[in-house]
Amino acid sequence: MNFIDIIGLFAGICVTASVIPQIVKVWRTKKVKQISLLTFGILTFGIAIWVVYGILKKDFPIIITNSISLFLNLIMVYFLIYYEKEE
Image (cartoon, rainbow, N blue to C red):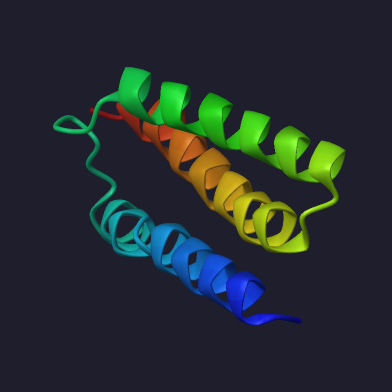
């Protein structure tokens, strides 16, 4: 792994980790009224495209970090849909 890959991984980890506090907050409070499903839907779609891009380029930092980010954002989209019914 070279220095450029390390920078890519670090950037990807920061972006991926950014959604975790929101997921934890929603999981604890079960409140999603102030969170936009459209925003998270578009973000999740964009991340899925980044995964495809990474696969096509065979760029492992992009594939790994965006795959994890995709998973986390899908959890958030699920919470938004599931908990919206309860409010």
